[in-house]
Amino acid sequence: MPPLLDRPPDRAGVRRANLALLVRLLRRHGAQSRAQLSTRSGLSKATVSNLVAELEARALVQSGGRHEGGQGRPGQLVELRPRGTWGLGLELDAGHVGSTLLDLSGTATTRRRTAADVRALGPERTLDELAALVTAAMSEVDGGSGAGTVAGIAVAVPGLVGAGTVRVAPGLGWRDVALADGLAARTGLPPERIVVGNDAGLAAVAETDRGSARGCPDVVFLLGGPGVGAGLIAGGNLIRAGEAGHLPLGPAGRPCACGRRGCWQTAVGVGALLRAFAAPGDLVRDPALDLAQRTSIVRRRAQQGDRGVLDALAGLGTALGLGIAVLADLLDPRMVVLGGYFAPLSDWLAEPIRAELTARSVTAEAGGLRIVPSRLGFTAVGTGAAQAAIRPLLDDPAQAPAGAPVSVEA
Image 1 (spheres, one colour):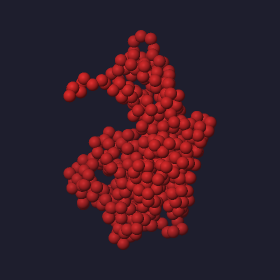
Image 2: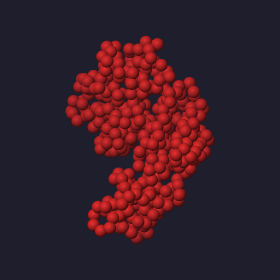
Image 3: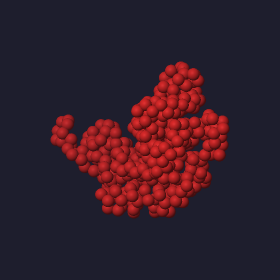
Image 4: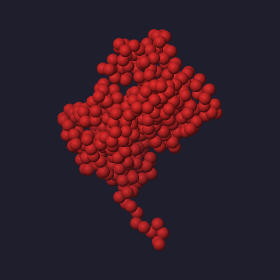
């Protein structure tokens, strides 16, 4: 057998990799001259010029201002097209649906979040709501022209997923829902352009990319809401995501939405917190309010010294600490990020969490474990979903046809 070096190089693969490299450099450093791109990429100036021409033809980059630094004549800057290509992230939970549009640079151009009883709506009506969010988001693209270019759509779901299907989402009462196919039928987007992912996993990736966990290779991200999701980052990569709220760490007799008793989320989900201090008629339990609005009310009352709220938060922190101790000793992360509704309340959760970790965790006793609030807060899930939607194009810009990526008519 001839040696591998005697085989012809995969020129198309090398070109795709180089196109992706230039896009990553422009995302990381902003507008660059061709000379700067050559220096940072290690590619020749002629190769960079050729690659930039292809990215321009694919409507991914455009000419910017003039670069005045360095020797010789000023160079023409190249920048990502700020309103040329988007990733559209959709999210749903028991109490809301939402959407996020990210442009090629990773900047959110549009966010929407609407309170909704997703469990009562059921899969078909929820898909209608998600399709309406797609239409609303696309109507704002290109100045409201009614059409826009997207690399794809990703949907974040609080449950176990696979191959575009929600296998089981206990908090929604869903099982074996063909989410990608259903959304494709309503939007006209090919099913292969629709990604379905676990919400905590997508949020964890966003948090490590530009949030509190940036630069930390080993992270457990906890997403607090009606349930509790967890995303595990190891070596800088998402390894696993799932519904940590169903660990058997809650009060033994408390029923869970999954039909079992004693799940962790019966002690740390937002429902448990509200039951601890709010009577049924309390404003904070108004079903018309979404999770962010309810959390804002809780935070304001805590700041005002409401004793019932403060006691409830202390109990929540203790229950959180128990579960974090288990996860920490099992996974040995360097950081645990509190996301979802935990993040805005972290000022009152930190002390009881630390006390519980000190009492129960060998990992915490050894030192080095940090517990931090999410920097992205309630935007983490939508941001992570939108990043997943645009990621295939970032990894392979050559998949974008000349002129524009996939078009979706609103």
